[in-house]
Image 1 (cartoon, rainbow, N blue to C red):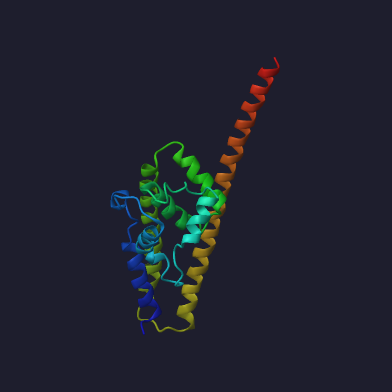
Image 2: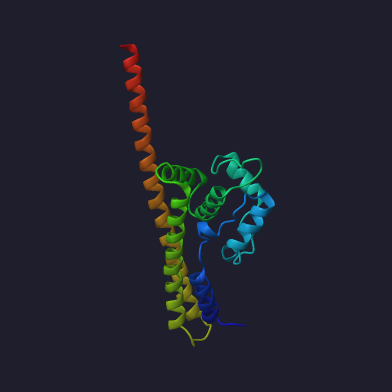
Length: 202
């Protein structure tokens, strides 16, 4: 059985080598639900191997459509745009609510096309995974050769704690940004409505 250090070094290597699928690698044809599930499982397997849970299910996708997180399929088929939405949602739902994800995607896609936004997302994700992998690998390599004892486990538990706290603080910051933008947008919309109402009374 590999040591904790060896396991984490191998895991970090996999994470570092992972590449979010680029737009150009998306299927050229539209897909039915079962094909979408198969494709996404193949692309996102690295994110589900820890807990053994499936990264996506038909009920998840139906729920995203029902709640208008992603567009409705066209004649039960999913386009490249749908695949881009799904990859983004499945990753972001770990740190943001579906409501916040919907706001974020709506804001971004109101200014640029889905392909451009997705490619930016893919690049950001690769960079984020690389940074995380380097941190885990650095501690693992520093501890390589040490026995799997309580002291070693404590080092990694402290790293896990730090990463968790950082993830929480990043999530809080993201929510604060989205909330501020939403409030600003609502105030602007209300101002326009009042202006129209006053003009109508004049």
